[in-house]
Length: 111
Length: 112
Image 1: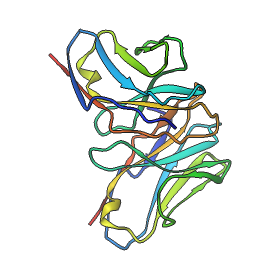
Image 2: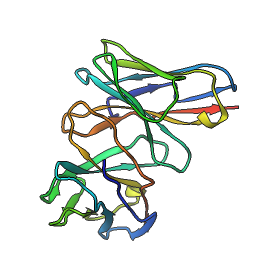
Image 3: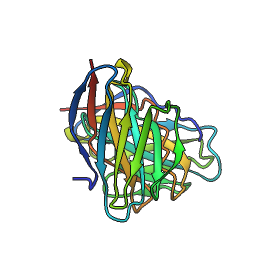
Image 4: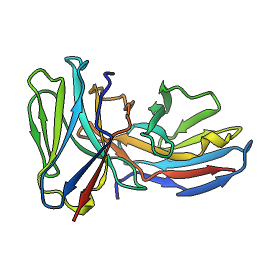
């Protein structure tokens, strides 16, 4: 149990559809980040939210968007899904000792 | 953030020390060295971090060379459960910046 919970754990969507992934982090962790991890690769930074505003973004197109809520939960939304979007999506919140606490991820398969 | 170079894979015998190297020759003075690991089908797990002094916690030790261009993560008595991909990351310790640049990491296999 890391204190960061992601749902669902697995998901299958069709190309062109939209998907929403959810993350619940620990109370007081007001920064949340999302990562995409393709099979056999390290996680790639998508974006981060601080106090409900996006304040950092990696090399991902605008169809990847997010929300952060006052209750320390957040969402990752992906529109117009492509086959290459199939990956493990990880949520992370700041750990008190300057590290990260990651959730176990959502495995998204686009067919 | 500076780049890191790690061997793609390593083996270690159970009960022996596992020494995982990382090169970060372009590290800046204000960048820390972080280590994470990822066990299959789980999210990355924080192990340890340091700036220039050697660090030790209940999981591992981190040895940073004097010129800070390389470091070694040491798991003193590796177990089968330490089989994972280990990531070395260098970055500024920005309280509000969660942008971690992961490379491909080192796949450590602990063998009985």
